[in-house]
Image (tube, rainbow, N blue to C red; front, side, top):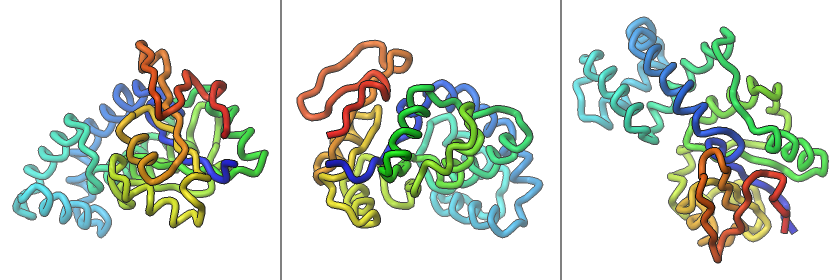
Length: 229
């Protein structure tokens, strides 16, 4: 019996297009001036320290670090300082009403249903925890944050590393085989399955037109097709 559900966001609860076509371009437009204006704030200074270390750049060269951040956005790099900074600028966008986070109607219904049934639901995404909370607080389906019992990001570990899922199971205090992990990325599902998680591979027609069968991971085209073991 499933005692907890852990879900990815992009391509799973929500469209890949929203992140790539709305959030990433917004961050790329806003980050240069945001960093220049707020570079002395402690949280931004700490992010820039991490960027300088990660990219081996001189700490005083703000323009070089801005250029590096923009390259990382273009490459969709899953780096904690970038994700943290994106979370900060996305917050400003959400609060100004520049956009609302996309969520599939079937996902919103299922999340509400599972919550009402008393099943704890968690998020595990490469986006920062702050960005995850903003995403669900300002979703097209309204504020969904009350449905979630917790959040995990790259500070727990890489999503394709089995150790990350072992750490999540330990944090939840649940046996891995009692946890269901939902994702659209097979390598992530493989990593979770390797430590005992139950898995479901979301292959939405909008994001994965060609359906792929799999002997290990049950496949679902949307949340309506997810059967809890």
